[in-house]
Image (cartoon, rainbow, N blue to C red; front, side, top):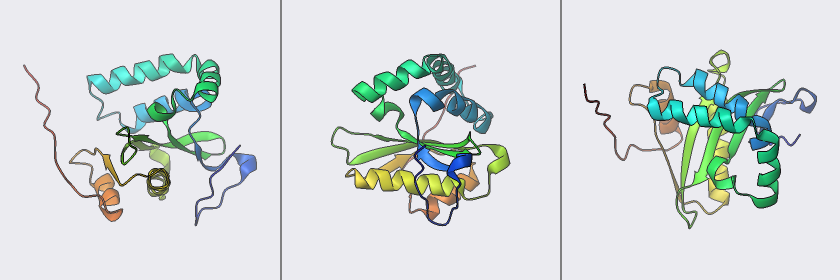
Length: 173
């Protein structure tokens, strides 16, 4: 297993603990389950549909892994990192180009399993994602966060992100 060394965090490769690149063939189902737990109260219809698609795609995990290794077809769509503790995916982040020039990047699905929160895992995942985008020529990154998610907003503020806009969800009766 390839584990990306993260300053300040000790990991044991025998236990498969640490940050490593997301592997669509190996991790898709676990990431779908993590997202469903981490964002349970925030998922709307589109989010639930995306989870269903991820779960369905995960049944083809081995095939997707082979296809991606040979074509790289999913690299932009599902590139990211997972945090593994004793072989279990407990953290995830997606980082992908948001334009064809790779100057703008999008960070999404910053998720950590409830029992592992408050340990700096999200911060480490964010640092790795920002570093990835920067090394690939990224000049800036965007992400979305719910206004009421004070913990996530505090993390993003501490990493230099600034509020540049907002969205409003409207529902018809």
